[in-house]
Image 1 (cartoon, rainbow, N blue to C red):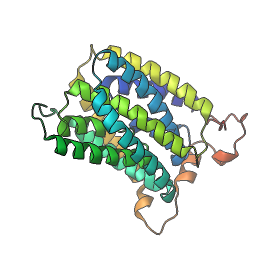
Image 2 (image 1 turned 135 degrees about the horizontal axis):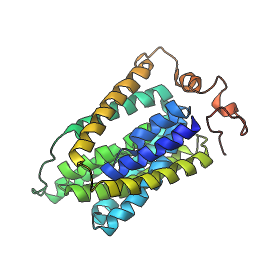
Image 3 (image 1 turned 60 degrees about the horizontal axis):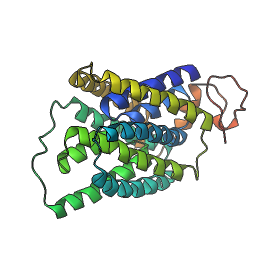
Image 4 (image 1 turned 90 degrees about the vertical axis):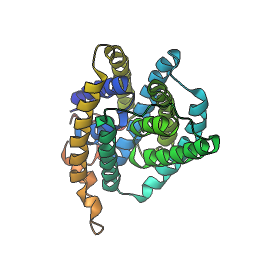
Length: 287
């Protein structure tokens, strides 16, 4: 399962290179359902991977002139604060509840991916209105990132296009820089109460970074519309499945079944009790 999980890291990078988003949407389920980590660990490690991968993409877009630094440096710190607070609030939610929220976000993301058009960013908003929208949008997206581990590209890009009227290419490039900032903020907050596998994070991120370079190159040969529609359908199916798997979150009297569910996908031993030399296919934790 470890080899499969690392192989899927390439898919995470490809999605980010082709779409400018999708890193956390794919990496969290990979960490949970393929590599056998608990939800909180998966969310924390996904934030680290997506932060590193987004940084590479942001640098590449910056060289092409597709990063609006003014908006990124306004939106980013507010989103970072929201992400940090969301990660701190995550201790009050069970892993099942966090995955249920994640599944709901996937369904929302599928809606945006299946749209054929974005509105033309020709109309400018009043500066006061634009500032208020930046603050509310950044803080809200940040909170959601901290709680569910979603990097937020599927949410930030529409915010930049619909609310701030940025051109699509600038929205994607600027979004990657914001995702970098708030992913690292959320990861730092999770480190105070979650153990992570550092070695796996490094390997997964390296492969995902290779994927984002390949995806950026392939973009010139593929139909963006076809890519978006195929990925939107995938998100719709995955989001529905994750919500079904996390249906216990809607039963207020139930206990959190996520930990045992994740472990059953690998072996009957608790994740925290694995020794580094076990060969079960799931990674050990490098503290």
